[in-house]
Image 1 (cartoon, rainbow, N blue to C red):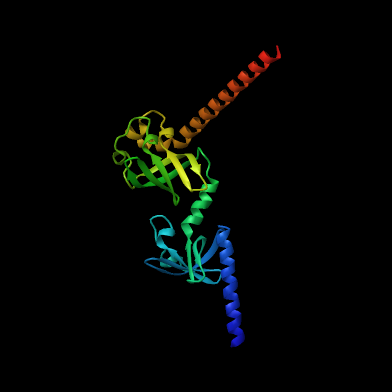
Image 2: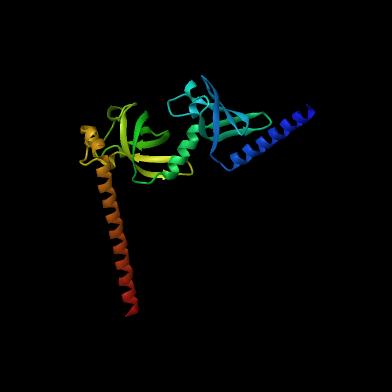
Amino acid sequence: MLFRSSRRRLLFAEAWETVATLHADDAVIQGEVAAVNRGGAMMLVEGLRAFLPGSHFLAGQNPTEEFVGKKLDLKFLDVDKEANRLVVSHRKAIVDAQINNLAVGAVLKGVVTAVKPYGAFVDVGGMRGLLHISQISCDHISNVDAVIPVGTAIKCMVISQDKGKGRVALSTKTLEADPGDMIKNQAKVYEFAEQTAGKYQERIDAEKRAREEAAQDVIFGLESVFSE
């Protein structure tokens, strides 16, 4: 019995060392859902029990009984051996993977989850992006809620991202074939979103090439002046 007890303590200590290292590396790990309740789920991670808050499962969802026994990708939120506390996030693992694979110009499907005077927050596959009021339409908008209220399913383009801070800036203005379509005919915007985005990207690339060529012309012109 003493040997078994010592063995358990050793394995317990090794497990905490492992999770501490994984936490420090911000690694994605797998955990098994052991039980669910109103607050979230109890997970088994590296032989230890960890808590997955409902708010860190998936946007707008709580884990249900059907997830018991299933494995989820997770990241650690809190690792405290002294307090015997492990807190993990499924949502963070998904969002971090998505933002690393995102590219400026990508068209995403999303749902408006919050509306502010300065714009709307959009959930795109568990990731939260900001659609600023100036990026909704080429036409002036004074009331965001009147155009895209909470719950609206939209398509939007990624116009910038900060992978370190997990921030994504979105635009529907760039998907308007005609100025004001987001106000007058949103269905048209979403139907031709990918096509319009492709044309927009082609125009941006052409403008970039033109600037680079103009810069080269200036350099060659200066070189010819100094060589005379």
